[in-house]
Each structure stands twice: as C-alpha cells, then as structure tokens.
Image (cartoon, rainbow, N blue to C red):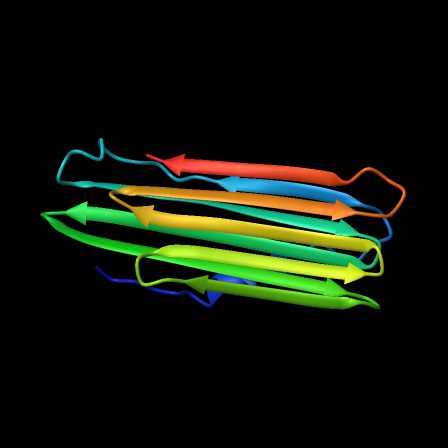
Length: 156
C-alpha cells in the first residue's frame, strides 16, 4: 500500500478559504469521482472527498479531505490528503491536519474574535476499497443564529 500526503491539499484549502468579510456564512462543497466495479471484485477504484468553509465577522475556517484507492491485478494503491486553514483579523486562529498510517485523516480549523467564531472539521478515510469523507462547518456571531452545514460522501 502506498500512502501520499500531498501538500497540494493544503494549497487547495487556502484557495477555498473565504475572504475575510463582515457577513456570516457557512458552506460545503463535495467532489466525488467515479467508481468502477463493485468493491468485491479484485480490480476497481474509488475516489472521494469533501470540503467546507465558514466565515463570520473577521474570522474564517476551511478544511478538506480527499482520497482514492485502486486495485489492479491484486495490487492496491491508496492515497489520502487533508488540509486546514484558519484566519482571524483581530483574534486567534488555529488549524491542524494529519493522516494516520492506516489512511484515516482528520483536519480541524477554528478562528475566533471575542464571541464571533468560525470552525470547520473534516474526517476522511480509505478502507476496504471504499473512500469516505465528512465535513462539518459552523460560524456564529453573538445575537444571531449560528450557520451550520454538513457534507458527507462515500464511494463506491
């Protein structure tokens, strides 16, 4: 099994990060590739991923997870990448992304400025010929209802 942690995932997270704005928003985007053949067959492939971002006041947070697996002639190759980005104009921001050796990845990002905050988290994994990813994002400005979104994908 080959595992690659592409730094391109972090660059992609930075590209999808929303610009710092005074408005409150939360959104997720999902990208899923095609799967060829049921997972019980010896040959096949699966790709999938999810990403999300949230922004409120002068804060923003984005995470993503993407993976793929392919089996051909009894040999399997799998990859998983995660990324996280957070920013706060006048507060604090924290982000982390990691992939364990068993192709289980977690990305978290949070930014806050007083009571205003934005956060996003993604959990992705490649296991048994299947790629799954879930992203939850949330932003909140005191005195307003929080904005939440969730995106889940499983392939095949």
